[in-house]
Each structure stands twice: as structure tokens, then as C-alpha cells.
Length: 243
Ligand code: UDP
Image 1 (cartoon, rainbow, N blue to C red):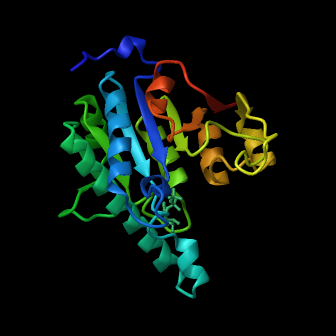
Image 2 (tube, protein in one colour):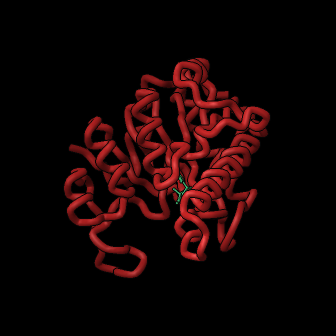
């Protein structure tokens, strides 16, 4: 194993936020084990640099509250189902990480002690100090929120230096780069510009929470092999959302 090289890593502790859809590969739903394994490898390669890693994984590949409420389900119940979906994704990622030798804890915002640890801030910090990857599951534990807000909340609580938001594209664009060939990528963009121009980096509550605590958000492509590690090495293509 390569020795830890934190001096060369840009940050000592980060929050990696990925959507649930990142785990479904080319399928339209659920978990695609080879994709989960590939992302686990990316995470481990950064962990091997000595970087302390927090993770939040969404649940959109399994269930979204808004989708349930659009079908007539009570919104809060649907949101709890969405939160449970994030626990399934977190357990799948934990399993993939442990298979490749990375120590990892799943920590839930809703108690389910037989399945995973409850969230206790000081305990989670201790795990990070002991170089365990912490996956925060079940969102904030509250309906009407998203996992982007959960990631921002936990990143602040864990004193992460940045949120790294892994997406399908390598940054924030002025319009959808998949549909518009002339879409322009921003190198840097402010929190207020993201909010005013509805740039769709994260939902408004997450952006406001990051802005109020001056927590940078780095948007990069998770589809790019080695993309996560490049950011930590100070390379790669990405957009920084800042004050
Ligand atoms: N959710 C919630 N509270 C939270 C986080 C998530 O109610 O604090 C629910 C919400 O219904 C959401 C679902 O969990 O639609 C899945 O999370 P999200 O949509 O953020 O997942 P992603 O889009 O990142 O895959």
C-alpha cells in the first residue's frame, strides 16, 4: 500500500456527496454492483492519501419523497421512505469499501441500532480521526429536506474543509452541457450567483447553509476515472462554488 501522503493532499477532511443515481449505472433503477465497486475504489484511492472522508449518498435511485407524494402518498411518509432508501445505498457502499479493505461506518440520522450506528457527533469525529470512512445515512432525519442539505449540515458539523459534489459532468455550466454544445463551464461561481441564476448545483437550502458557513463546494465528474483523487491532488477539471 502507498503510504499516506496528506501533505500533498489539498484537504485533510472532506465531504463527498453523490446522488443515489450515481450508483445505478446504466440501469434505470436501483443498485449496479460494478458501479458501486468502481466508486468505492475511487473513494479508497483518496483515503489512501491520508484524507479523512465523510460521505452522503442520496436515495433517488430507489425512492424520492416528491415522487411518492405526486402519486398520492402523504409527503412526510414518502420522505421517510426516501430516507430509508439512502440507508440501503450507504450499506451497499460500506460493503463495497470493506471488501477492498477500507474501514467504514454507516451512521444514521434515524435510529436503527441493529443496522447501523446512530449519529453522535463526537463519536463520528472519533471515527474520522481513526481513519474510518463515515457514511452519513437517512439524510437529516427530517422530511422536506434533501441529502444535499444533509451533506452540508454534516460537513459543517464534522469541520470538513470542502464538499466535493460528484456528478455526471465536470462542473457547473451556464446551461445543460448534455443538451447544448455551446454550454460554458464556470471555473468559479459564487453562492449568490448559483442561487440567483438557479444553476442547480444543490438545492437552495444546501447552498445557503454552505454560504453562511463559508464552506466551499467543488463540483466534479464522478464518471471520470481518478476524478476524485485528482481534485485532492490539486488537478482535474471542476467548478468551485465560493463566497
Ligand atoms: N430525504 C428527506 N430528508 C432528508 C434527506 C432526504 O426527507 O434530510 C428524502 C427525500 O424524500 C428525498 C429522498 O430522501 O427525495 C432521497 O434523497 P435525495 O432526493 O436527496 O437523493 P438524491 O437525489 O441525491 O439521490
